[in-house]
Length: 189
Image (cartoon, rainbow, N blue to C red; front, top):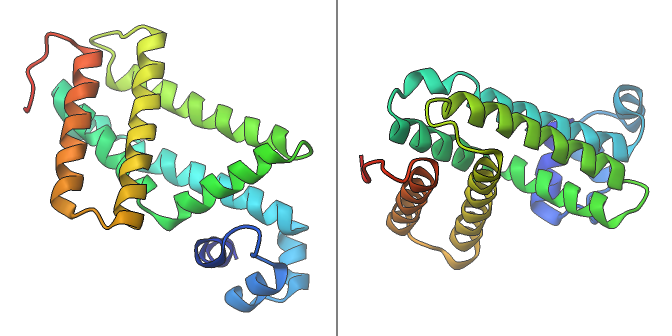
């Protein structure tokens, strides 16, 4: 049911994702969906929870696979890219935008944003423990990571940016984040 909601949002956008579309796409009756979730808003909240859990799963434990600082930065960029390039994340962003625009749902948006921030903070502290970046530096790393990768994803989707350009942009992002975390670190490793 969550996958059906994500697919509908990806195809027609949040505003045009109706209960009937989700029912048709999922093959589950509206009564079955209501039993599981309650209402359409609860389905959208479940999508947010699902994406947040996918993000945590993607990042969990990858620090042990990359031992150098530059390797961990690359792993973080790769994990975030895998998330952002997925249609599920686009649905997540669209739902959050909708929540922020609605006073009644803004609290849910703030709750999910806070969860993402806590997840990133924990990962940042673990991944970059040896350089001990101050909180403002970690905040900048997180902000730059997602702003840049979102921009690259949009450019690729709407302007058809070639994969070689996408790879080069991600490499520049890795170098930039590495410089922020450890200005004395070697580049391009």
